[in-house]
Image (spheres, rainbow, N blue to C red):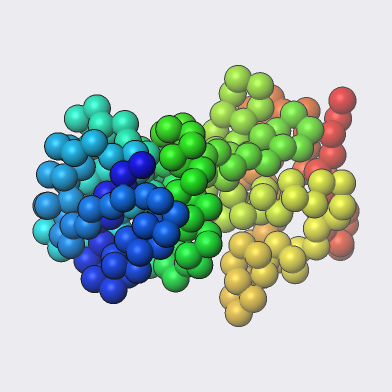
Length: 224
Ligand code: CA
């Protein structure tokens, strides 16, 4: 197995190479995006570990160019950014998985093993409740053959509701989860987003509905 590491933090790149070597992976290192793109296009690799913030050409551009050029090698993105938007952007462009720095080496090796085993098949992270399926990698909500993209807050709220299933989720839990503990957001912010989600459930023709328990919170209800 051969891995291409594109990472401008030299210490991290060397640590990765050492860790991979211990796990019987050979690797090449490129310290900038231009060289990384060239190696990725011309070499034969089983996996590319790619930093996002790179000199010359950034990681997102590299993913886009490789996929447009038909290079299907699995790509694991590494980045200091942690927003859902970046995560989705990277995956939309064709990356297979995403790790936010700092990460544990064990976590990285687990990703490396999964991605080299799967040969480029996207590692999907799905959550299911009733007739709904939430793809955590793309923030898309599915019902049968219909699907819709959720905004960042809508995703956080739907994720929380689906995780809790038939258990009631309080407005406070939703506020802490989607807006953050220190946020100034209020109950009516929650109500607005719940109405957005209900609209999307109608669009999906979902049997599962968001039930309101007055002065308490919300829960999902399967209406089958
Ligand atoms: Ca960097």
